[in-house]
Image 1 (cartoon, helix red, strand yellow):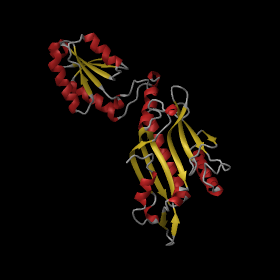
Image 2 (image 1 turned 180 degrees about the vertical axis):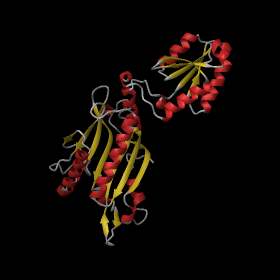
Image 3 (image 1 turned 135 degrees about the vertical axis):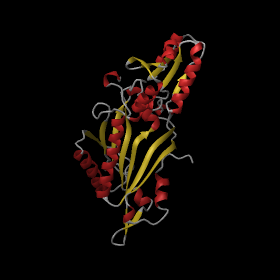
Image 4 (image 1 turned 120 degrees about the vertical axis):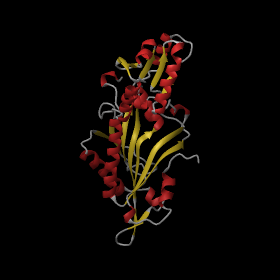
Length: 325
């Protein structure tokens, strides 16, 4: 289905059966392929596209207190994701409390009390987290305020990478209700959250952040196996197969190009590692490992190389901060 958002579909899933307070909070998450007919002037590389994959979720909550707790948990998840990528608050991203505008009834749902409650809850969350944030009026969604995680792209323009939103409107429109402890029907509250944002936009930020020098664990190609001469191709293919079986994204260059040209190509592609195989390596039963960031690591057994690479991938090791643009 060509859809611009997941909200209605997740709400229909919630409405597929009767819910009680025991079912809440109910968390529905999806990696969703979405489509939006953005104006041509708005399109910008991977940052803003017409077709994108959104890490999206909707959390149906019983009351403001439960919503506040879920918002805290969502921000914990976002902070975890940021740390995994080595992004720092204040340096690589910032928080924005996006508020509504009570005077603009054409853009925002009219319910001053609900807006006041929702905005105060989000403000309390940020204060309790000791987060540095700014408040900006007229940046909320029509259905409620939100906490936006902002990043600047290489052109200096600020974009929203992650968001957590407090929604008191859609529960009314979709009749998202539950049976409370008192046996009566109550209106729920929805928290919209995106833990990784649009995959395309995050990839754009990461390309710029790492200047193309991706850590091993997210590099599209992780290792290149380079034989010095054609007589070493068979051994190179053997090493390639061993790395591939270990789950390491590997490429090998057994073409007739010169050795120097092959090495330059691997460096140009910014592969984290490349393996060199020559006469001395075959005689010693070893390979020579070269690191993009740390240079020549010397001769090693292929089993030790696999262990080293898998450890770096599993721990999601990041390059030295001084080597990140």
